[in-house]
Image 1 (cartoon, one colour):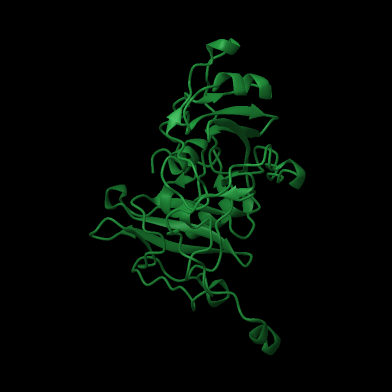
Image 2: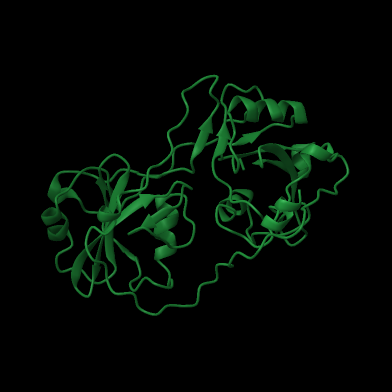
Length: 308
């Protein structure tokens, strides 16, 4: 938790509400704060849901799994991984997480220990022509790959498949997930995570990205990092609101027709099902909010809304 930028020290519910109000939080926006002695390893997930701030206890089981209100929603060993998993539909959890609230001016904000990621050796953080890219990997084996810059925010994945270089647009969705040709493989929030996922067999992608190309001396450059953190929302008291990502135009998604998908292992991503009833927080020390600020509950059905 010491490397994320949405972590805060213990604060009262009133202080948490002020944090969300200052950031003009929208549904799905979130932040995490410590609960009690940091050595206890307990946290509270603050989440904007149906226009209100809701509070959810996070703690580990004896097996090392993180729970939210005593239930495991994403089987992951760290809180950041759990929260990344909740950016996609998860059974029993009625809303996907969107933007992390980051306010460096808040006295309870905890500055990350390391905000600069290690360089990505396979990223050329500058513009290359198509011909230059293909010359770099000419004669290389299948699975040889690198990333190059495209415009201000996007990248192109160059990968050798069936002895030929292919080109694929890499862009970030509004939810902060990196996609390839407008398709998501897992839920990577950084370029490094995306490549790590694609280095293993995954359904719908026919070649492993297991041979990174790093020698850019032929084009007079060196690789530089291009890591992308999860989207964050800065408190408007200090900075202007962060503009949301705009999806790339449909016509620009496929830089070049990609390799035909080959059968892969069955996906292990859990499919979303209708939300479960109200999620309640039963832990002592976290008093439930007033009835009008009930904890996170599944959205009402259309029939229920009509009855109301």
